[in-house]
Image (cartoon, rainbow, N blue to C red; front, top):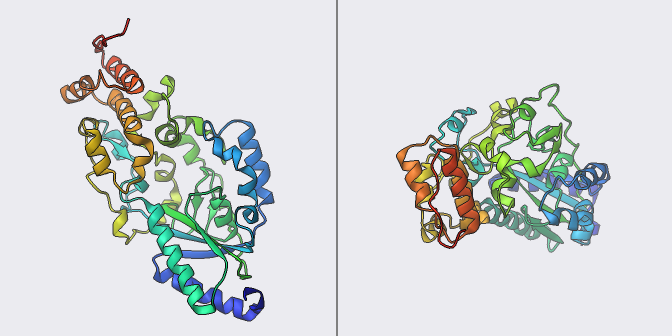
Length: 363
Protein backbone atom coordinates (compact mmCIF):
# COMPACT_ATOMS: atom_id res chain seq x y z
CA UNK A 1 0.00 0.00 0.00
CA UNK A 2 2.75 2.45 0.95
CA UNK A 3 4.57 1.79 -2.33
CA UNK A 4 1.70 3.50 -4.13
CA UNK A 5 2.27 6.84 -2.38
CA UNK A 6 3.18 9.49 -4.93
CA UNK A 7 5.81 12.13 -4.30
CA UNK A 8 3.16 14.81 -3.95
CA UNK A 9 1.08 12.73 -1.55
CA UNK A 10 4.20 11.85 0.46
CA UNK A 11 4.97 15.55 0.91
CA UNK A 12 1.41 16.28 1.97
CA UNK A 13 1.48 13.34 4.37
CA UNK A 14 4.73 14.54 5.93
CA UNK A 15 3.24 17.99 6.47
CA UNK A 16 0.32 16.35 8.25
CA UNK A 17 2.63 14.10 10.30
CA UNK A 18 4.63 17.11 11.50
CA UNK A 19 1.41 18.77 12.65
CA UNK A 20 0.30 15.64 14.52
CA UNK A 21 3.71 15.43 16.18
CA UNK A 22 3.33 18.98 17.51
CA UNK A 23 -0.16 18.21 18.76
CA UNK A 24 1.20 15.17 20.62
CA UNK A 25 3.77 17.23 22.50
CA UNK A 26 6.88 16.86 20.35
CA UNK A 27 8.70 20.06 19.53
CA UNK A 28 10.06 18.87 16.19
CA UNK A 29 9.96 15.96 13.75
CA UNK A 30 12.43 15.29 10.97
CA UNK A 31 12.98 12.54 8.43
CA UNK A 32 16.26 10.72 7.77
CA UNK A 33 17.36 8.13 5.25
CA UNK A 34 19.23 5.05 6.43
CA UNK A 35 22.77 5.73 5.25
CA UNK A 36 24.92 5.91 8.39
CA UNK A 37 28.19 5.02 6.68
CA UNK A 38 29.74 8.39 7.53
CA UNK A 39 29.37 7.56 11.23
CA UNK A 40 30.99 4.13 11.00
CA UNK A 41 34.65 5.25 11.33
CA UNK A 42 33.88 7.24 14.47
CA UNK A 43 31.95 4.38 16.10
CA UNK A 44 34.61 1.82 15.22
CA UNK A 45 37.44 4.02 16.53
CA UNK A 46 35.50 4.65 19.76
CA UNK A 47 34.95 0.94 20.30
CA UNK A 48 38.56 0.10 19.41
CA UNK A 49 39.77 2.42 22.17
CA UNK A 50 37.45 0.69 24.66
CA UNK A 51 35.81 4.03 25.40
CA UNK A 52 32.54 2.16 25.93
CA UNK A 53 33.87 0.57 29.13
CA UNK A 54 31.56 -2.16 30.43
CA UNK A 55 28.80 -1.31 27.96
CA UNK A 56 29.44 -4.49 25.99
CA UNK A 57 26.17 -4.10 24.12
CA UNK A 58 27.67 -1.17 22.21
CA UNK A 59 30.11 -3.53 20.50
CA UNK A 60 27.81 -6.54 20.44
CA UNK A 61 25.16 -4.71 18.41
CA UNK A 62 27.50 -2.58 16.32
CA UNK A 63 26.13 -3.83 12.97
CA UNK A 64 22.52 -3.21 13.98
CA UNK A 65 23.35 0.37 14.96
CA UNK A 66 24.83 1.07 11.55
CA UNK A 67 22.03 -0.56 9.55
CA UNK A 68 18.45 0.28 10.59
CA UNK A 69 17.13 -2.27 8.09
CA UNK A 70 18.81 -5.06 10.03
CA UNK A 71 17.11 -3.85 13.18
CA UNK A 72 13.71 -3.54 11.52
CA UNK A 73 13.47 -5.10 8.03
CA UNK A 74 11.50 -3.08 5.52
CA UNK A 75 12.47 0.29 6.98
CA UNK A 76 12.87 3.05 4.39
CA UNK A 77 12.88 6.15 6.58
CA UNK A 78 13.37 7.13 10.21
CA UNK A 79 11.07 9.73 11.73
CA UNK A 80 13.15 11.38 14.45
CA UNK A 81 11.42 13.45 17.12
CA UNK A 82 12.57 15.61 20.01
CA UNK A 83 10.78 16.56 23.21
CA UNK A 84 12.02 19.29 25.56
CA UNK A 85 12.36 18.30 29.22
CA UNK A 86 13.99 21.19 31.07
CA UNK A 87 12.05 22.61 34.01
CA UNK A 88 14.44 25.51 34.48
CA UNK A 89 16.00 28.21 32.33
CA UNK A 90 18.87 28.56 34.78
CA UNK A 91 22.25 27.66 33.30
CA UNK A 92 24.18 28.12 36.53
CA UNK A 93 26.73 25.73 37.99
CA UNK A 94 25.80 26.99 41.47
CA UNK A 95 23.91 23.81 42.53
CA UNK A 96 27.19 21.92 42.13
CA UNK A 97 28.74 24.15 44.79
CA UNK A 98 26.11 23.13 47.35
CA UNK A 99 28.23 20.18 48.39
CA UNK A 100 25.82 18.95 51.05
CA UNK A 101 23.03 18.50 48.49
CA UNK A 102 22.68 15.73 45.92
CA UNK A 103 22.87 16.68 42.27
CA UNK A 104 20.63 14.52 40.09
CA UNK A 105 20.80 15.08 36.35
CA UNK A 106 17.84 17.14 35.13
CA UNK A 107 16.48 14.43 32.86
CA UNK A 108 16.07 12.00 35.78
CA UNK A 109 14.29 14.20 38.32
CA UNK A 110 10.81 13.43 37.07
CA UNK A 111 9.16 10.36 35.59
CA UNK A 112 11.06 8.15 33.20
CA UNK A 113 10.72 9.52 29.68
CA UNK A 114 10.87 6.18 27.88
CA UNK A 115 7.24 5.15 28.35
CA UNK A 116 5.86 8.64 27.82
CA UNK A 117 7.61 9.17 24.49
CA UNK A 118 6.92 5.63 23.34
CA UNK A 119 3.20 6.17 24.00
CA UNK A 120 3.26 9.40 22.01
CA UNK A 121 5.05 7.69 19.13
CA UNK A 122 2.39 4.98 19.17
CA UNK A 123 -0.33 7.63 19.05
CA UNK A 124 1.46 9.22 16.11
CA UNK A 125 1.58 5.86 14.32
CA UNK A 126 -2.12 5.38 15.05
CA UNK A 127 -2.94 8.73 13.46
CA UNK A 128 -0.90 7.88 10.39
CA UNK A 129 -2.59 4.48 9.96
CA UNK A 130 -5.98 6.06 10.50
CA UNK A 131 -5.18 8.43 7.65
CA UNK A 132 -3.52 6.15 5.07
CA UNK A 133 -4.28 2.63 6.27
CA UNK A 134 -1.93 -0.02 7.56
CA UNK A 135 1.82 0.64 7.22
CA UNK A 136 5.02 -0.81 8.63
CA UNK A 137 6.68 0.83 11.63
CA UNK A 138 8.47 0.30 14.93
CA UNK A 139 9.02 2.83 17.70
CA UNK A 140 12.28 3.22 19.62
CA UNK A 141 13.13 5.33 22.66
CA UNK A 142 16.70 4.65 23.76
CA UNK A 143 15.72 1.00 24.07
CA UNK A 144 17.52 -0.71 21.18
CA UNK A 145 20.76 -0.42 19.19
CA UNK A 146 19.89 2.84 17.42
CA UNK A 147 22.35 5.63 16.57
CA UNK A 148 19.71 8.12 17.59
CA UNK A 149 21.86 11.24 17.58
CA UNK A 150 23.28 10.41 14.16
CA UNK A 151 19.78 9.85 12.79
CA UNK A 152 18.49 13.03 14.46
CA UNK A 153 21.36 14.99 12.92
CA UNK A 154 20.52 13.57 9.49
CA UNK A 155 16.87 14.49 10.10
CA UNK A 156 17.81 18.11 10.75
CA UNK A 157 16.97 18.16 14.48
CA UNK A 158 20.41 19.44 15.44
CA UNK A 159 24.11 18.70 15.20
CA UNK A 160 26.24 16.44 17.37
CA UNK A 161 28.26 18.88 19.43
CA UNK A 162 31.76 18.56 20.79
CA UNK A 163 30.21 17.17 24.00
CA UNK A 164 28.55 14.40 21.90
CA UNK A 165 25.10 15.83 22.74
CA UNK A 166 22.65 16.80 20.02
CA UNK A 167 22.37 20.59 19.94
CA UNK A 168 19.52 22.47 18.32
CA UNK A 169 20.16 26.02 17.14
CA UNK A 170 16.82 27.25 18.52
CA UNK A 171 16.42 25.03 21.59
CA UNK A 172 19.83 24.01 22.95
CA UNK A 173 20.22 20.41 24.12
CA UNK A 174 17.78 19.79 26.98
CA UNK A 175 15.53 17.39 25.08
CA UNK A 176 14.82 13.69 24.62
CA UNK A 177 14.87 11.84 21.30
CA UNK A 178 12.67 9.11 19.89
CA UNK A 179 12.38 7.34 16.55
CA UNK A 180 9.73 5.77 14.39
CA UNK A 181 11.25 3.40 11.84
CA UNK A 182 8.85 3.21 8.91
CA UNK A 183 8.37 1.85 5.39
CA UNK A 184 6.79 5.12 4.24
CA UNK A 185 8.76 6.69 1.32
CA UNK A 186 8.70 10.17 2.79
CA UNK A 187 10.98 13.02 1.62
CA UNK A 188 14.07 13.40 3.81
CA UNK A 189 15.17 16.57 5.57
CA UNK A 190 18.46 18.39 5.15
CA UNK A 191 21.01 17.30 7.77
CA UNK A 192 21.98 19.85 10.39
CA UNK A 193 25.47 21.35 10.21
CA UNK A 194 27.75 21.98 13.22
CA UNK A 195 27.72 25.38 14.91
CA UNK A 196 30.12 24.85 17.81
CA UNK A 197 32.81 26.92 16.13
CA UNK A 198 35.89 27.46 18.27
CA UNK A 199 34.02 27.01 21.57
CA UNK A 200 35.51 24.31 23.80
CA UNK A 201 33.67 25.18 27.02
CA UNK A 202 32.14 21.71 27.37
CA UNK A 203 35.49 19.97 26.95
CA UNK A 204 37.17 22.20 29.52
CA UNK A 205 34.44 22.05 32.19
CA UNK A 206 34.26 18.24 32.44
CA UNK A 207 35.08 17.38 36.08
CA UNK A 208 36.80 14.10 35.23
CA UNK A 209 38.35 15.20 31.92
CA UNK A 210 36.40 12.52 30.10
CA UNK A 211 36.80 14.22 26.72
CA UNK A 212 39.96 13.32 24.85
CA UNK A 213 39.05 15.80 22.13
CA UNK A 214 36.01 17.23 20.32
CA UNK A 215 33.35 14.50 19.95
CA UNK A 216 35.66 12.05 21.73
CA UNK A 217 34.20 10.86 25.03
CA UNK A 218 35.90 8.21 27.14
CA UNK A 219 32.81 6.87 28.91
CA UNK A 220 35.00 5.19 31.52
CA UNK A 221 35.72 8.63 32.97
CA UNK A 222 32.26 10.12 32.40
CA UNK A 223 30.25 10.70 35.59
CA UNK A 224 27.04 9.62 33.86
CA UNK A 225 28.67 6.28 33.09
CA UNK A 226 30.21 5.95 36.54
CA UNK A 227 26.94 6.62 38.37
CA UNK A 228 24.59 4.70 36.06
CA UNK A 229 26.25 2.17 33.76
CA UNK A 230 29.15 1.02 35.93
CA UNK A 231 28.02 -1.81 38.21
CA UNK A 232 31.14 -2.21 40.32
CA UNK A 233 33.35 0.09 42.34
CA UNK A 234 34.01 3.61 41.11
CA UNK A 235 37.76 4.12 40.50
CA UNK A 236 39.12 5.80 43.60
CA UNK A 237 41.07 8.45 41.71
CA UNK A 238 37.85 9.70 40.08
CA UNK A 239 35.74 9.91 43.24
CA UNK A 240 36.92 13.35 44.44
CA UNK A 241 36.17 14.79 40.99
CA UNK A 242 32.54 13.67 41.13
CA UNK A 243 31.59 16.17 43.81
CA UNK A 244 27.90 15.88 44.67
CA UNK A 245 26.81 14.40 41.34
CA UNK A 246 25.01 11.19 42.33
CA UNK A 247 23.08 10.32 39.16
CA UNK A 248 24.31 11.60 35.84
CA UNK A 249 26.09 14.87 35.10
CA UNK A 250 24.94 18.05 33.34
CA UNK A 251 28.11 20.15 33.35
CA UNK A 252 28.72 20.04 29.62
CA UNK A 253 25.15 21.18 28.97
CA UNK A 254 25.05 23.79 31.72
CA UNK A 255 28.11 25.47 30.23
CA UNK A 256 26.95 25.26 26.59
CA UNK A 257 26.13 28.74 25.22
CA UNK A 258 23.47 27.31 22.92
CA UNK A 259 21.37 26.46 25.95
CA UNK A 260 20.51 30.12 26.36
CA UNK A 261 17.79 29.15 23.89
CA UNK A 262 16.38 26.49 26.22
CA UNK A 263 12.60 26.29 26.30
CA UNK A 264 10.67 25.16 29.35
CA UNK A 265 8.88 21.85 29.04
CA UNK A 266 5.12 21.78 29.50
CA UNK A 267 5.16 18.07 30.35
CA UNK A 268 4.05 17.62 33.97
CA UNK A 269 5.71 14.20 34.12
CA UNK A 270 9.13 15.80 33.76
CA UNK A 271 8.71 18.00 36.85
CA UNK A 272 10.99 17.04 39.79
CA UNK A 273 9.49 14.55 42.22
CA UNK A 274 10.26 13.85 45.88
CA UNK A 275 12.62 16.80 46.12
CA UNK A 276 15.20 15.20 43.84
CA UNK A 277 16.28 18.64 42.67
CA UNK A 278 17.22 19.86 46.15
CA UNK A 279 17.66 16.98 48.62
CA UNK A 280 20.37 16.60 51.24
CA UNK A 281 22.87 13.84 50.51
CA UNK A 282 22.56 12.54 54.07
CA UNK A 283 18.76 12.37 53.79
CA UNK A 284 18.83 10.33 50.59
CA UNK A 285 21.55 8.07 51.94
CA UNK A 286 19.30 7.00 54.81
CA UNK A 287 16.41 5.94 52.60
CA UNK A 288 15.50 2.32 53.16
CA UNK A 289 15.38 0.10 50.11
CA UNK A 290 11.60 0.14 50.39
CA UNK A 291 11.56 3.93 50.34
CA UNK A 292 14.03 3.98 47.45
CA UNK A 293 11.80 1.69 45.39
CA UNK A 294 8.72 3.73 46.24
CA UNK A 295 10.30 7.13 45.58
CA UNK A 296 11.92 6.02 42.32
CA UNK A 297 8.90 4.20 40.91
CA UNK A 298 8.60 5.20 37.27
CA UNK A 299 11.99 6.94 37.46
CA UNK A 300 15.18 6.51 35.44
CA UNK A 301 17.05 6.35 38.75
CA UNK A 302 15.85 2.76 39.17
CA UNK A 303 18.48 1.89 36.58
CA UNK A 304 21.31 2.15 39.05
CA UNK A 305 19.58 -0.01 41.68
CA UNK A 306 19.59 0.57 45.43
CA UNK A 307 23.15 -0.67 45.86
CA UNK A 308 24.43 1.64 43.12
CA UNK A 309 22.40 4.51 44.58
CA UNK A 310 24.07 4.07 47.97
CA UNK A 311 27.49 3.77 46.32
CA UNK A 312 26.98 7.06 44.47
CA UNK A 313 25.67 8.84 47.56
CA UNK A 314 28.59 7.59 49.65
CA UNK A 315 30.97 9.24 47.19
CA UNK A 316 28.95 12.45 47.37
CA UNK A 317 29.08 12.34 51.17
CA UNK A 318 32.81 11.81 51.04
CA UNK A 319 33.10 15.01 49.02
CA UNK A 320 30.65 16.95 51.22
CA UNK A 321 31.54 19.12 54.23
CA UNK A 322 32.24 16.90 57.24
CA UNK A 323 29.19 17.87 59.25
CA UNK A 324 27.73 15.77 62.05
CA UNK A 325 24.81 14.80 59.78
CA UNK A 326 27.20 13.61 57.05
CA UNK A 327 29.42 11.60 59.39
CA UNK A 328 26.49 10.01 61.22
CA UNK A 329 24.77 9.05 57.97
CA UNK A 330 27.93 7.32 56.75
CA UNK A 331 28.40 5.49 60.03
CA UNK A 332 24.91 4.04 59.75
CA UNK A 333 25.92 2.25 56.54
CA UNK A 334 29.33 0.98 57.71
CA UNK A 335 28.01 -2.55 58.14
CA UNK A 336 25.84 -2.64 55.04
CA UNK A 337 25.47 -6.12 53.54
CA UNK A 338 27.01 -4.95 50.25
CA UNK A 339 30.80 -5.07 50.18
CA UNK A 340 30.75 -2.40 47.48
CA UNK A 341 28.69 -0.02 49.63
CA UNK A 342 30.95 -0.67 52.64
CA UNK A 343 34.03 0.08 50.57
CA UNK A 344 32.68 3.44 49.42
CA UNK A 345 31.49 4.32 52.92
CA UNK A 346 34.96 3.55 54.29
CA UNK A 347 36.51 5.77 51.63
CA UNK A 348 34.06 8.58 52.44
CA UNK A 349 34.78 8.41 56.16
CA UNK A 350 38.51 8.51 55.46
CA UNK A 351 37.98 11.73 53.49
CA UNK A 352 36.72 13.25 56.73
CA UNK A 353 39.51 11.83 58.84
CA UNK A 354 37.20 9.34 60.52
CA UNK A 355 38.57 5.84 61.10
CA UNK A 356 35.87 3.32 60.14
CA UNK A 357 34.83 0.83 62.77
CA UNK A 358 36.04 -2.76 62.18
CA UNK A 359 33.47 -4.86 60.37
CA UNK A 360 32.60 -8.26 61.85
CA UNK A 361 34.50 -10.93 59.98
CA UNK A 362 37.13 -8.52 58.65
CA UNK A 363 40.72 -9.36 59.43
